[in-house]
Length: 307
Image 1 (cartoon, rainbow, N blue to C red):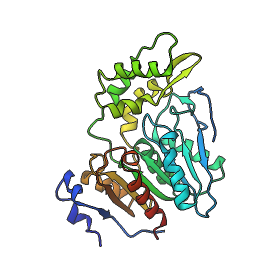
Image 2 (cartoon, rainbow, N blue to C red):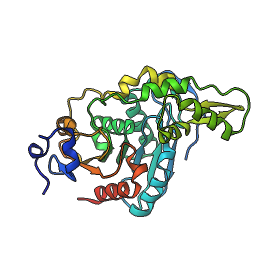
Image 3 (cartoon, one colour):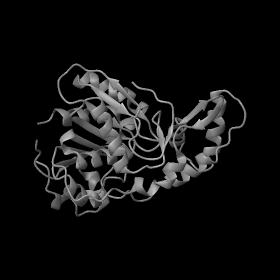
């Protein structure tokens, strides 16, 4: 039986390294779009649908900042094989092949996902979001609990994201990348990588950012809307104030080597998601699904199939 919260939260942030699972309460019950600029309202999101034949609510996967639906391609296929259910992967506004928009807030991104689910006639789903996508998923669950059968937030909590990440530096250096003239994609990636390396020292993060470098009309550009993200970065790091709660089954799935779900966040989790459990995957950092894919899949499938 998991320990009560009072017994596991006393040791500060690093207490979580000793834990396998914390439970707060008893559980209760392809499209491709070219970028176009909008100034507000609902954005029609780009998505990929992986078809399954088993009954049960589909699984909907939401990526994090600077990510795209392609981040979950192999995970989505594996989930279809293991659960038999339909799996939907979605590009957030200003990301992937979804349209660009001036506004980047969680209520706006939640409304986009709600619109897509209604468009696809999905009345209820298992909603799984990583980082920024996790906060979007939490917002939708709090606003429209009937649409979310189960909720998974991957390596993010409803608390403001602290310490500040390197995102402001990433945005600045990406905005300053200069690629003049026509060149092969391999050359463009190498030159962009060299310019990013002056600020972004971790090769794995540079390679992740470089997935957003695309060629359009013979020129290379970033497919993410850097200006809008920069203008709303504080909104992305924060979380909307909410006075209601989501009482459905909820899993907060963190990387044991990541700081983004810690004992400091447990009060906010318990207040907004009283039927949540917290689990950590050993050896994983922030990109849990990429660093430990089999452990990630096991955790998701166990949660989806639990009663």
